[in-house]
Length: 357
Image (cartoon, rainbow, N blue to C red; front, top):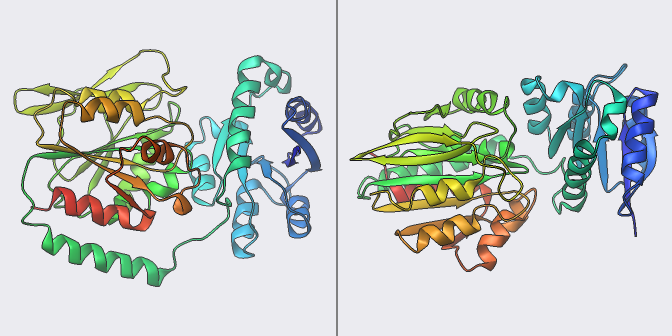
């Protein structure tokens, strides 16, 4: 049975082109179209779709306003953003992801350019992931009481983690649903965390700096987009630059960031496998590997190769808390996971494993 799609875009030409792309795939059919957020809200109030393809800039009610209204009314939907805003408008894109959009694609300014094979292939790939997601895009958000309880638990854990010894590093991988999931983990880490945190989040160039800035504003630990040559320091989170592969180089007793420009691996760039494999020759006593929500299997091969050479501890995000249970599932199926924990507990498990100063 074909999956039903709602397409929301104010441009008649763009609607026609995107409809043609979606309907060309035997897995999908555009069931309804809307010219703005108000029309889409009315349809979503009455009908259920497998996925929504949503523009940002529209009259009467734009895409971000629609996402806010869906949250307010507790209407579940699986949403991917498709807008000319989403390439350079990194803030707009991050706002959309925070409001529940699962993923995004940049539309060319010219509708006819959407017909090229690369755009079509990427759009259908993302749409398939969004439509198959078991977790609705506009789903559970943590209440203030839950967040306070979680913060108290992290503080309690930190008090008992001061005795944890060893020179360690945290290497975290995430993809679809990752930007929102990272906001449930990074801001819960204490500033006196005894280890650096290196993150590969699958995003294109131009977005990771904004993601790092946003996380930094919410966190006690320092969060930055990793720059070439950065020396890893405890209590700092380094997010891999979009469009390049991040490696950790070992130099005597110091570790630094080095980028390489190999082709995409596992269909992504940056690829977490490179990050994990670059740690094979490090002198860390233990590497804490964290694999969170995302499509595909990035991280599995890298962690397997790392396990052959180093002592590691692997934390996988539990299925029901993942936007897309792909990467953690691959880790679990490969028998690599030492712990399988829900999203809200990942921070405290990191603290318990690496300790605080």
